Image 1 (cartoon, rainbow, N blue to C red):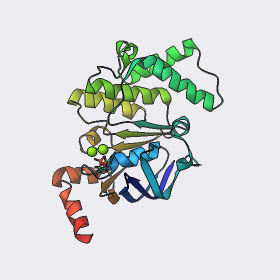
Image 2 (cartoon, helix red, strand yellow):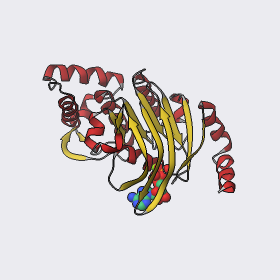
Image 3 (cartoon, helix red, strand yellow):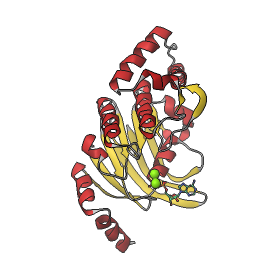
Image 4 (cartoon, helix red, strand yellow):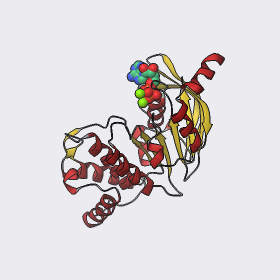
Length: 252
Ligand code: ADP
Ligand code: MG
Ligand code: MG
């Protein structure tokens, strides 16, 4: 699904990613953890194609395509979904209309007819139930005045509607109370499938109590310094990041 080879990336002339390698197969859930400022969000932004970030070296293949050659829009249409750490507010545009436009954009790109009103509504209802989101939220301007929990639920709902091949969730757990966390995690779990891969970016282990990843990677100072299975997240919870980062700092 996703193959990242030796990615180096700069922002404002400063190298943030210093040679990232990562392979994610269809159906797998990977978690990227790491201290603040390690480059986790930078990696997500590079994959999404945000222009402030300059890729200076390396390659990324996504579902058989050269990802770095695709525009941000085409990456989304090819099935990449990115839930941002700070979701945007769009005054005057309801969530429903926003999602309808996004779904039909993607269908057009794939050479499919737009969904008719009845089919769209049916799909909305089905996915609303899946992620336990309320109709009233969907008729409001997207993210405007949404609580932290509502924004995150809305992200998971968008993901459900867009049916991506690869979903990248950057700190989807940040700022959630325990009930909202459980709902968001359940939603994501229901969207796991053998055809879909998920990359969870998180500072804290607690999200991984609810969503069990197949692999866990620690990103530190722009490099993946440790990879393991879900037990690695538990070890981090118990010992903190220092037990890994001290070792890395000594070797630099
Ligand atoms: P993380 O998500 O792991 O907390 P980030 O990817 O957000 O880390 O940040 C990695 C480094 O890149 C930090 O040192 C941060 O200050 C720097 N950085 C991120 N975005 C910008 C930006 N827009 N301009 C300058 N530096 C940035
Ligand atoms: Mg951060
Ligand atoms: Mg971040």
